[in-house]
Image (cartoon, rainbow, N blue to C red):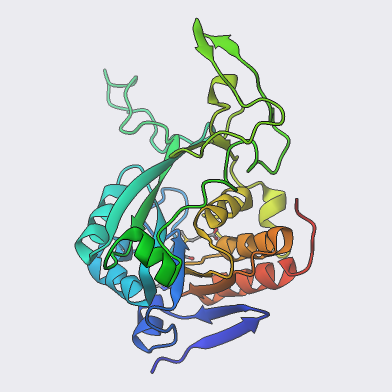
Length: 312
Ligand SMILES: C[S@@+](CC[C@H](N)C(=O)[O-])C[C@H]1O[C@@H](n2cnc3c(N)ncnc32)[C@H](O)[C@@H]1O
Protein backbone atom coordinates (compact mmCIF):
# COMPACT_ATOMS: atom_id res chain seq x y z
CA UNK A 1 0.00 0.00 0.00
CA UNK A 2 1.48 3.37 -0.98
CA UNK A 3 1.71 6.22 1.45
CA UNK A 4 -1.01 8.49 0.18
CA UNK A 5 -2.35 11.77 1.51
CA UNK A 6 -6.13 11.96 1.32
CA UNK A 7 -8.22 15.10 1.77
CA UNK A 8 -11.99 14.96 1.97
CA UNK A 9 -13.70 18.23 1.10
CA UNK A 10 -17.44 17.95 1.37
CA UNK A 11 -18.47 15.35 -1.30
CA UNK A 12 -15.05 15.39 -2.93
CA UNK A 13 -11.93 13.29 -2.36
CA UNK A 14 -8.43 14.39 -3.29
CA UNK A 15 -5.44 12.05 -3.30
CA UNK A 16 -1.83 13.10 -3.45
CA UNK A 17 0.18 10.37 -5.14
CA UNK A 18 0.57 8.35 -8.32
CA UNK A 19 -2.87 7.67 -9.81
CA UNK A 20 -1.75 4.25 -11.07
CA UNK A 21 -0.69 3.14 -7.58
CA UNK A 22 -3.80 4.62 -6.02
CA UNK A 23 -5.96 2.52 -8.34
CA UNK A 24 -3.78 -0.57 -7.78
CA UNK A 25 -4.16 -0.11 -4.04
CA UNK A 26 -7.94 -0.17 -4.42
CA UNK A 27 -8.44 3.37 -3.07
CA UNK A 28 -10.78 4.07 -5.98
CA UNK A 29 -13.21 1.17 -6.23
CA UNK A 30 -13.65 -0.89 -9.41
CA UNK A 31 -16.63 0.13 -11.57
CA UNK A 32 -17.37 3.10 -9.31
CA UNK A 33 -16.62 6.09 -11.56
CA UNK A 34 -19.19 7.49 -14.02
CA UNK A 35 -16.77 9.51 -16.14
CA UNK A 36 -13.17 10.69 -16.38
CA UNK A 37 -12.19 14.19 -17.49
CA UNK A 38 -8.46 14.72 -17.58
CA UNK A 39 -5.50 16.63 -18.95
CA UNK A 40 -2.58 14.22 -18.63
CA UNK A 41 1.09 15.01 -19.16
CA UNK A 42 1.66 14.85 -22.90
CA UNK A 43 5.37 15.05 -23.04
CA UNK A 44 5.45 18.53 -24.49
CA UNK A 45 9.10 19.26 -23.57
CA UNK A 46 8.31 22.94 -23.18
CA UNK A 47 11.03 25.23 -24.44
CA UNK A 48 10.76 27.90 -21.75
CA UNK A 49 9.74 25.90 -18.68
CA UNK A 50 10.78 22.44 -17.58
CA UNK A 51 7.96 20.65 -15.82
CA UNK A 52 9.45 17.68 -14.06
CA UNK A 53 6.05 15.92 -14.13
CA UNK A 54 6.16 15.62 -17.93
CA UNK A 55 6.23 11.95 -18.96
CA UNK A 56 4.93 9.52 -21.55
CA UNK A 57 2.38 8.05 -19.12
CA UNK A 58 -0.57 9.00 -21.38
CA UNK A 59 0.94 7.13 -24.34
CA UNK A 60 0.87 3.78 -22.49
CA UNK A 61 -2.15 1.44 -22.74
CA UNK A 62 -1.43 0.19 -19.17
CA UNK A 63 -2.31 3.65 -17.84
CA UNK A 64 -5.73 3.60 -19.45
CA UNK A 65 -6.33 -0.03 -18.47
CA UNK A 66 -6.29 1.16 -14.85
CA UNK A 67 -8.86 3.82 -15.75
CA UNK A 68 -11.04 1.15 -17.41
CA UNK A 69 -10.94 -0.77 -14.14
CA UNK A 70 -12.49 2.04 -12.08
CA UNK A 71 -14.95 3.23 -14.74
CA UNK A 72 -18.45 1.80 -14.86
CA UNK A 73 -19.37 -0.04 -18.07
CA UNK A 74 -20.28 2.56 -20.69
CA UNK A 75 -18.40 5.27 -18.75
CA UNK A 76 -17.10 8.14 -20.89
CA UNK A 77 -13.62 9.63 -20.83
CA UNK A 78 -12.31 12.96 -22.14
CA UNK A 79 -8.56 13.41 -22.42
CA UNK A 80 -6.76 16.51 -23.67
CA UNK A 81 -3.86 15.99 -26.05
CA UNK A 82 -1.38 18.20 -27.91
CA UNK A 83 -1.67 18.66 -31.69
CA UNK A 84 1.61 16.86 -32.34
CA UNK A 85 0.93 13.75 -30.31
CA UNK A 86 -2.71 13.35 -29.29
CA UNK A 87 -2.86 10.43 -31.71
CA UNK A 88 -0.52 8.59 -29.30
CA UNK A 89 -2.98 9.13 -26.46
CA UNK A 90 -5.86 7.96 -28.70
CA UNK A 91 -3.82 4.95 -29.77
CA UNK A 92 -3.04 4.01 -26.16
CA UNK A 93 -6.73 4.37 -25.22
CA UNK A 94 -7.69 2.18 -28.17
CA UNK A 95 -5.08 -0.46 -27.30
CA UNK A 96 -6.22 -0.44 -23.68
CA UNK A 97 -9.74 -1.39 -24.77
CA UNK A 98 -11.56 1.96 -24.90
CA UNK A 99 -13.77 2.74 -27.86
CA UNK A 100 -12.73 6.07 -29.42
CA UNK A 101 -15.93 8.03 -30.05
CA UNK A 102 -14.75 11.43 -31.25
CA UNK A 103 -12.04 14.09 -31.05
CA UNK A 104 -13.12 17.59 -30.04
CA UNK A 105 -10.90 20.46 -31.21
CA UNK A 106 -10.54 23.53 -28.99
CA UNK A 107 -9.42 26.18 -31.45
CA UNK A 108 -7.83 29.37 -30.11
CA UNK A 109 -6.22 32.52 -31.46
CA UNK A 110 -3.51 33.30 -28.96
CA UNK A 111 -1.09 30.36 -29.10
CA UNK A 112 2.59 31.40 -29.09
CA UNK A 113 4.90 30.14 -31.86
CA UNK A 114 7.23 27.57 -30.29
CA UNK A 115 10.00 27.87 -32.83
CA UNK A 116 12.29 30.75 -33.80
CA UNK A 117 13.33 31.57 -37.37
CA UNK A 118 16.34 29.70 -38.66
CA UNK A 119 19.69 31.45 -38.42
CA UNK A 120 21.13 29.42 -41.28
CA UNK A 121 22.10 31.65 -44.19
CA UNK A 122 19.52 31.41 -46.93
CA UNK A 123 16.91 29.91 -44.53
CA UNK A 124 16.15 33.01 -42.41
CA UNK A 125 12.51 32.98 -43.56
CA UNK A 126 12.04 29.41 -42.34
CA UNK A 127 11.13 27.90 -38.95
CA UNK A 128 10.52 24.34 -37.77
CA UNK A 129 6.98 24.60 -36.35
CA UNK A 130 3.62 26.24 -36.99
CA UNK A 131 1.93 28.40 -34.33
CA UNK A 132 -0.34 26.14 -32.24
CA UNK A 133 -4.00 27.10 -32.63
CA UNK A 134 -5.83 24.08 -31.23
CA UNK A 135 -5.81 21.40 -28.58
CA UNK A 136 -7.48 18.05 -29.07
CA UNK A 137 -9.85 16.48 -26.54
CA UNK A 138 -10.35 12.78 -27.20
CA UNK A 139 -13.74 11.28 -26.32
CA UNK A 140 -13.66 7.56 -25.51
CA UNK A 141 -16.05 5.08 -23.90
CA UNK A 142 -15.66 1.91 -21.87
CA UNK A 143 -17.33 -0.95 -23.76
CA UNK A 144 -20.49 -2.46 -22.28
CA UNK A 145 -22.55 -5.58 -22.80
CA UNK A 146 -25.88 -5.54 -24.64
CA UNK A 147 -27.49 -2.48 -26.19
CA UNK A 148 -26.77 1.13 -25.26
CA UNK A 149 -30.30 1.53 -23.87
CA UNK A 150 -29.86 -1.52 -21.64
CA UNK A 151 -26.55 -0.11 -20.41
CA UNK A 152 -28.07 3.32 -19.74
CA UNK A 153 -30.86 1.72 -17.70
CA UNK A 154 -28.36 -0.36 -15.73
CA UNK A 155 -25.43 2.06 -15.27
CA UNK A 156 -26.68 5.51 -16.33
CA UNK A 157 -23.56 5.88 -18.48
CA UNK A 158 -22.61 6.20 -22.15
CA UNK A 159 -24.64 9.22 -23.24
CA UNK A 160 -23.81 12.91 -23.72
CA UNK A 161 -25.91 15.70 -22.27
CA UNK A 162 -26.58 17.45 -25.59
CA UNK A 163 -29.52 19.53 -24.31
CA UNK A 164 -27.93 21.48 -21.44
CA UNK A 165 -24.84 22.11 -23.60
CA UNK A 166 -26.70 23.58 -26.59
CA UNK A 167 -24.80 26.57 -27.95
CA UNK A 168 -26.39 29.76 -26.75
CA UNK A 169 -27.93 27.96 -23.80
CA UNK A 170 -24.56 26.72 -22.57
CA UNK A 171 -22.83 30.11 -22.66
CA UNK A 172 -22.04 31.63 -19.31
CA UNK A 173 -20.81 34.93 -20.70
CA UNK A 174 -23.03 37.13 -22.76
CA UNK A 175 -21.08 36.91 -26.03
CA UNK A 176 -23.28 37.64 -28.98
CA UNK A 177 -25.58 34.97 -27.64
CA UNK A 178 -28.33 35.41 -30.16
CA UNK A 179 -27.99 35.70 -33.88
CA UNK A 180 -30.16 35.89 -36.89
CA UNK A 181 -29.47 35.11 -40.51
CA UNK A 182 -26.46 36.85 -42.04
CA UNK A 183 -24.27 36.71 -45.05
CA UNK A 184 -20.59 35.83 -44.62
CA UNK A 185 -18.27 35.48 -47.60
CA UNK A 186 -21.40 35.42 -49.79
CA UNK A 187 -22.83 32.40 -47.96
CA UNK A 188 -26.12 32.44 -46.11
CA UNK A 189 -25.55 31.64 -42.45
CA UNK A 190 -28.27 30.85 -39.93
CA UNK A 191 -27.60 31.59 -36.29
CA UNK A 192 -29.50 30.88 -33.09
CA UNK A 193 -32.16 33.53 -32.57
CA UNK A 194 -33.32 35.03 -29.30
CA UNK A 195 -35.50 32.54 -27.49
CA UNK A 196 -34.22 29.63 -29.59
CA UNK A 197 -33.12 26.53 -27.70
CA UNK A 198 -29.59 26.85 -29.08
CA UNK A 199 -27.56 24.92 -31.56
CA UNK A 200 -26.75 21.21 -31.08
CA UNK A 201 -23.23 20.97 -29.55
CA UNK A 202 -20.49 20.06 -32.02
CA UNK A 203 -16.96 18.67 -31.85
CA UNK A 204 -15.40 22.12 -32.23
CA UNK A 205 -14.95 24.63 -29.41
CA UNK A 206 -13.59 28.09 -30.26
CA UNK A 207 -12.29 31.17 -28.44
CA UNK A 208 -13.49 33.75 -30.90
CA UNK A 209 -16.79 35.50 -31.36
CA UNK A 210 -16.29 36.04 -35.10
CA UNK A 211 -19.76 35.73 -36.53
CA UNK A 212 -19.01 32.71 -38.69
CA UNK A 213 -17.82 30.89 -35.57
CA UNK A 214 -20.92 31.74 -33.58
CA UNK A 215 -22.34 28.29 -34.08
CA UNK A 216 -19.67 26.79 -31.80
CA UNK A 217 -19.25 26.91 -28.04
CA UNK A 218 -16.86 29.73 -27.27
CA UNK A 219 -14.27 29.82 -24.50
CA UNK A 220 -10.97 31.72 -24.09
CA UNK A 221 -7.81 30.61 -22.30
CA UNK A 222 -7.76 31.01 -18.51
CA UNK A 223 -6.95 34.57 -17.40
CA UNK A 224 -4.39 35.31 -14.66
CA UNK A 225 -7.23 36.52 -12.47
CA UNK A 226 -9.13 33.25 -12.83
CA UNK A 227 -6.04 31.09 -12.24
CA UNK A 228 -5.18 33.00 -9.06
CA UNK A 229 -8.70 33.37 -7.66
CA UNK A 230 -8.14 31.35 -4.46
CA UNK A 231 -4.36 30.90 -4.34
CA UNK A 232 -1.28 31.91 -6.32
CA UNK A 233 -1.44 29.29 -9.04
CA UNK A 234 1.98 28.53 -10.49
CA UNK A 235 0.88 25.54 -12.58
CA UNK A 236 1.88 25.91 -16.25
CA UNK A 237 -1.08 24.27 -17.94
CA UNK A 238 -4.19 25.57 -16.18
CA UNK A 239 -7.37 24.95 -18.16
CA UNK A 240 -10.14 27.57 -18.26
CA UNK A 241 -13.05 26.90 -15.90
CA UNK A 242 -15.65 27.74 -18.51
CA UNK A 243 -14.28 25.00 -20.77
CA UNK A 244 -14.07 22.48 -17.93
CA UNK A 245 -17.63 23.29 -16.80
CA UNK A 246 -18.86 22.72 -20.34
CA UNK A 247 -17.12 19.33 -20.49
CA UNK A 248 -18.38 18.36 -17.03
CA UNK A 249 -21.91 19.26 -18.07
CA UNK A 250 -21.55 17.35 -21.35
CA UNK A 251 -20.51 14.11 -19.62
CA UNK A 252 -22.03 14.39 -16.18
CA UNK A 253 -25.36 12.81 -15.40
CA UNK A 254 -26.74 14.14 -12.07
CA UNK A 255 -25.01 12.53 -9.02
CA UNK A 256 -22.12 11.33 -11.25
CA UNK A 257 -18.75 10.46 -9.77
CA UNK A 258 -16.20 12.35 -11.89
CA UNK A 259 -12.51 11.41 -11.75
CA UNK A 260 -9.52 13.47 -12.84
CA UNK A 261 -6.46 11.24 -12.32
CA UNK A 262 -4.03 14.01 -13.42
CA UNK A 263 -5.70 16.98 -11.77
CA UNK A 264 -2.79 19.46 -11.70
CA UNK A 265 -4.09 22.64 -10.04
CA UNK A 266 -7.60 21.18 -9.82
CA UNK A 267 -9.50 22.95 -12.62
CA UNK A 268 -11.82 19.95 -13.20
CA UNK A 269 -12.64 19.90 -9.47
CA UNK A 270 -13.43 23.63 -9.35
CA UNK A 271 -15.62 23.21 -12.45
CA UNK A 272 -17.50 20.34 -10.76
CA UNK A 273 -18.15 22.48 -7.68
CA UNK A 274 -19.32 25.43 -9.76
CA UNK A 275 -21.70 23.15 -11.68
CA UNK A 276 -23.01 21.74 -8.37
CA UNK A 277 -23.63 25.29 -7.09
CA UNK A 278 -25.30 26.49 -10.27
CA UNK A 279 -27.20 23.44 -11.42
CA UNK A 280 -27.61 21.36 -8.23
CA UNK A 281 -25.88 18.52 -10.07
CA UNK A 282 -24.62 16.75 -6.93
CA UNK A 283 -21.46 15.56 -8.69
CA UNK A 284 -18.77 13.92 -6.58
CA UNK A 285 -15.23 14.73 -7.65
CA UNK A 286 -12.21 12.47 -7.18
CA UNK A 287 -8.90 14.12 -8.01
CA UNK A 288 -5.37 12.72 -8.00
CA UNK A 289 -2.16 14.72 -8.27
CA UNK A 290 1.39 13.45 -8.05
CA UNK A 291 3.28 16.57 -7.04
CA UNK A 292 2.90 18.02 -3.58
CA UNK A 293 3.13 21.67 -4.70
CA UNK A 294 0.40 21.19 -7.33
CA UNK A 295 -1.72 19.23 -4.86
CA UNK A 296 -1.57 22.14 -2.38
CA UNK A 297 -2.75 24.53 -5.10
CA UNK A 298 -5.58 22.18 -6.13
CA UNK A 299 -6.65 21.75 -2.51
CA UNK A 300 -6.83 25.51 -1.93
CA UNK A 301 -8.65 26.17 -5.20
CA UNK A 302 -11.22 23.41 -4.61
CA UNK A 303 -11.79 24.26 -0.94
CA UNK A 304 -11.90 27.97 -1.83
CA UNK A 305 -14.51 27.50 -4.52
CA UNK A 306 -16.96 25.65 -2.25
CA UNK A 307 -20.07 27.67 -1.49
CA UNK A 308 -18.55 30.78 -3.01
CA UNK A 309 -21.28 31.39 -5.53
CA UNK A 310 -18.99 33.96 -7.23
CA UNK A 311 -19.54 32.42 -10.65
CA UNK A 312 -22.35 32.52 -13.14
C1 LIG B 1 -1.24 18.85 -17.76
S1 LIG B 1 -1.21 18.87 -16.02
C2 LIG B 1 -2.92 19.11 -15.56
C3 LIG B 1 -3.26 20.56 -15.39
C4 LIG B 1 -4.73 20.81 -15.05
N1 LIG B 1 -5.56 20.58 -16.21
C5 LIG B 1 -4.99 22.20 -14.51
O1 LIG B 1 -5.87 22.91 -15.04
O2 LIG B 1 -4.31 22.61 -13.55
C6 LIG B 1 -0.92 17.19 -15.64
C7 LIG B 1 -0.70 16.92 -14.15
O3 LIG B 1 -0.57 15.50 -13.95
C8 LIG B 1 0.29 15.28 -12.85
N2 LIG B 1 0.79 13.88 -12.90
C9 LIG B 1 1.77 13.38 -13.67
N3 LIG B 1 1.91 12.05 -13.47
C10 LIG B 1 0.96 11.71 -12.56
C11 LIG B 1 0.59 10.48 -11.93
N4 LIG B 1 1.23 9.34 -12.22
N5 LIG B 1 -0.43 10.50 -11.04
C12 LIG B 1 -1.08 11.65 -10.74
N6 LIG B 1 -0.76 12.85 -11.28
C13 LIG B 1 0.24 12.89 -12.19
C14 LIG B 1 1.36 16.34 -13.03
O4 LIG B 1 2.04 16.60 -11.81
C15 LIG B 1 0.57 17.54 -13.56
O5 LIG B 1 0.24 18.44 -12.53
